Image (cartoon, rainbow, N blue to C red; front, side):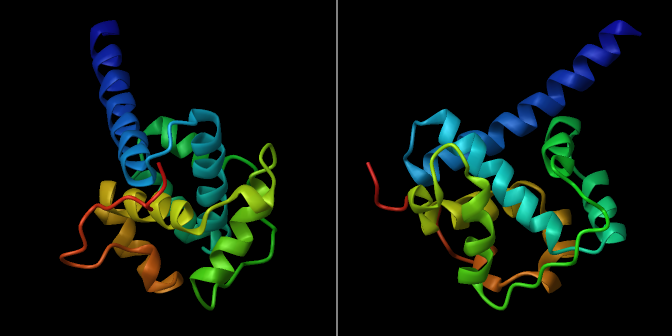
Length: 150
């Protein structure tokens, strides 16, 4: 039994690591602490834009370690956030990147985190698509490009 649990956990950890590696490639940023905080902040704002029932449905499709990030800082009674455009979403993310300050958040990095998240878990993208600006989703033919930072 313990071997099966080990394989399960390793598989889920690999899936989460693939997502983080994709973020690093897209942003060309090697600051793991910044990207981790940005990852958490982006997930928090995504979750805030979904009704609790939809948020739970999204969580079911995520690996356990990403699901933990998804529910971090969750307040179920919190008012539902709506994002008229990608700038409104980015404005939601900024205050959650506490260690670096809101001015340190680069818009392209937020978009990269969201796009790689939805690309990694397409079933989540289908659930979430009606609730978010289209710029947070990769469009057909859109190449994985970096934000231009080195």
